[in-house]
Image (tube, rainbow, N blue to C red):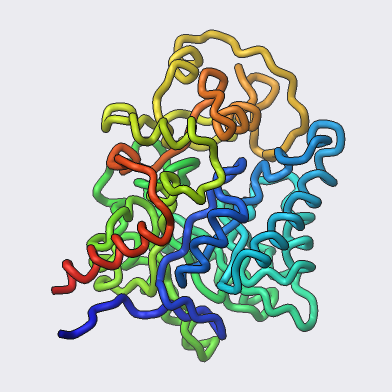
Length: 361
């Protein structure tokens, strides 16, 4: 019997036997627990830096120091739990973007993934001898070209890989609301665009620039289909939420288990981008115009309209992560309603591989 396994994902000198990048889920959903568990199964585990300081007691008094300290702790804890490949996700829109990048480099993280805006100047933080790979997250071929061109011309540094994230993903989306359901923006088209745009940069760099696809990829069959289209790997986030190792609370995970297809809604986030979330009473109250009293603890997202916002999205997401869903909401991908149980990352990966083998056959 021929063993049908997905091919390994190569990013420079790094090799992930399982070509899955666990998507970074901010405000405490993917920290060291989940990232280490995925890395232990051969994938790439990712710690999300957005709101990471929520685990520190002085977050609201000393925002910058609390977030930097928390990131160091999480990277070091993940290293204690795993010898696999670990990355961090640092949103361009974070007001402490630069400090987080420097901290990740100091801790010698394997990969920095960066999106929620174009990470045009990410390579400028590199120092001599840094081994950390740098990977932009984009939502179009044009964006991939702009980033790669800037990195090559200004820093003589081509992207180590590129993640293209489609409109079926969870959280903040890099699309206009009217494009989210438009077939013209389907992952298949976006992937083809990015693959084509990277070809000349690969020629200039003299090496491969692997393209990883994310957004709506939920099963091993999905992974097989996307890899057949030319992707070097896949990014998956939503399916890892309902695992034992996910760092969110049981209440947060239960929101996924209870969700129906109709509960997955597009909201207009106060940070200036649409986002996909699970509808609940909190979001219904916001939609009804009910004001949610709050004080802005720190202008954490550069694009946030915190003056006119009826609620603080950071506090809402912290509440959700801790299971206080009446005071917050959960971001989720389009397939969140398909979750039916909580299982270990190990068992989930085994299921994904079974699904992949069935599709390959």
